[in-house]
Length: 285
Image (tube, rainbow, N blue to C red; front, side, top):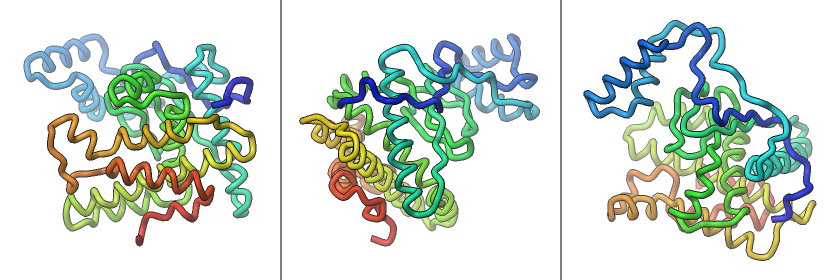
């Protein structure tokens, strides 16, 4: 990818090295944290899960926590992520404007190990995620190394695809898809039906990531030879069937929430080839 020298986004909050913030005036304190650690040791429960439960029992705080530094970041991976975010801002602002709408860019929060968001306390183990209530993408940059070592999907465009996918969820949120799916999942007759709705949402986000890449390359010549293959390999590497096979040796389609490797690569390719958000409609198909 030809990303160096491009504009970086100012919608970046760097919380790395700070740890998860728990609202001012509503923290557990040293005694509470020690109690959580003791309970974790006694029960074998992840301490992050216990912290989240304990926090939910606390009175509401005035703020979620101290914000991190904003603006340009200094390290290479941070600059790369900020540049990719800026390019998604360019593409989606243009596409929304073509429909007579104004694009509201998401915030990118960089963190390590764990992070507090409007969606609760999350460990880096969940991977990159988008939180609709606060309109932010959360990213532990160590995931890119994991994508390479564990899933065999190296390359800068593979990493860019991950960011663009989460931004795709932001676009879905702005267009009302996220709320509609959440409502439909509450009314679903079974967990399998709810999972199928999640798969459709995820595949649409894959396609929207491809839409971004299509326009970024057409307008700014962003992609280099081999980049498309990197992106498709990354999409396939994190398909539910492959993830389940690696974890348990069994594939259970009824429990999928993101789609198979073939499906994910197929929808990313659709976005890459068409550049048309309307081509990403996964509901009703």
